[in-house]
Length: 263
Image 1: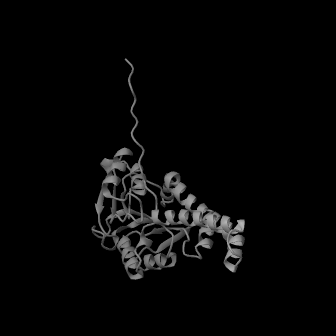
Image 2: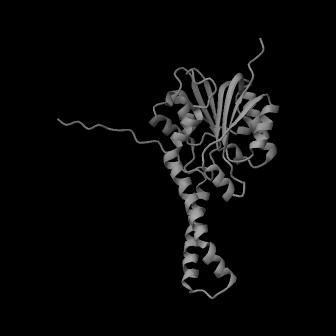
């Protein structure tokens, strides 16, 4: 009798900033259409017509290229990115760490950390905003943990990074990827960063990847006791995004370490 082998469905880690991706594709498609009509001479000659003839194709390439990059990197590049980020942990992984993922979303960083644990545990917190990540909800994150075989090491909570529901010096490692910038007010971002420093154990490390506010993150962390903060570049596409977004999007990674408690 022939037996069928069943494979577990792959985890779905969603599309980051789905509204931005949608708007880039719409803008690029509109630019192609307007450029084609202007180039064909169907529109009356004007400054706007000449502008689109000269620049419409470049606008379309930029919008469609960025949209495609964001979509493809979300669908196929997240695992590689998370492994690179987790490899940055100072001193490597022992396997017994307690880990917190701030703004865990559908769990890509959280689950990657849990895979490196043996006796340790990984906790993810989020407030589940779907404008930041498609399909963002705690049950989907738990399902991803189940599919990845780490459900027994993962806890997922609904909680705000500005008020992390854990005591001081609770976690060995705190990670966050493209989440903190979604707190729009500077003073509230500072509160979230101070919370990360508060729950980090002496001798612990944080790995924070984001796209804005690098200088604020560095200064607040250092003032809150994470005194050793080092910057790491992310990819060769970072300068391109910074240029196209007029400096509003600049990928960076900060590796912070809290000094060990004095003996």
